[in-house]
Image 1 (cartoon, rainbow, N blue to C red):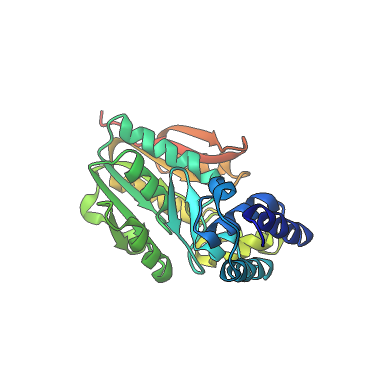
Image 2: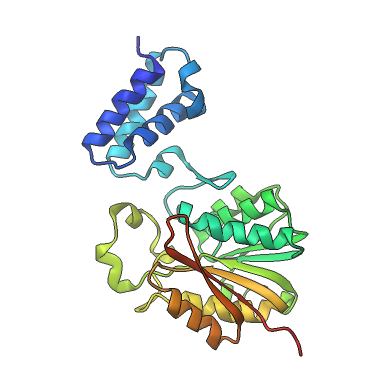
Length: 279
């Protein structure tokens, strides 16, 4: 009979042979998912049944076939929450967690009304709603597929989901919002062929933003400028070589207090800015 520990070792070996960099961690996640047990408690789980072993084998085959771990399990962990994901919606990355934390901090400091643009699965909004609970909160997404995940992931949170192009969304809220947060597409089209294989599993709509990677960031700046009240703030993610360009985008849109921030790996990752107070 196979114990969970033995199953983890076997899965890790198979993933390592296939070149999966995080094989040991993924093995624990896959075995735990198959058994319905938190990976930290696998040591307490009983020996595997034949059906459980078959389930693990199917999951491993799917992963080795090129599916992202998050598509295999159908979920992605992000800060203190988990969201449902699958083909057609962007998989949230750990490097975005500090941007979400920045938004949480704004609400903790007194911000009442929050808008997330390019919301995708809703990971940022779910983290903000769970950790800080703003009084009013909207999440905007244009993709039909991603919007279905957004609605599902934010059900019961009180966040208003909006299926629309951000450029034209929420016009009735102009000049009333305290915080705008966004992880827009920001990869230049010229970088398509050099991306890691796992990135190609995400939808193009969530990745690419024209020749310079800044088309959507310019829209975020424009939309934030009209949505924010004077003194309101915006935070927008970007590629690790785009900080200076993104700062210029927000400067041209009339923002002040423009600040570049690093991610968990100390790489430039997001910019925050303030809409000027009324003089």
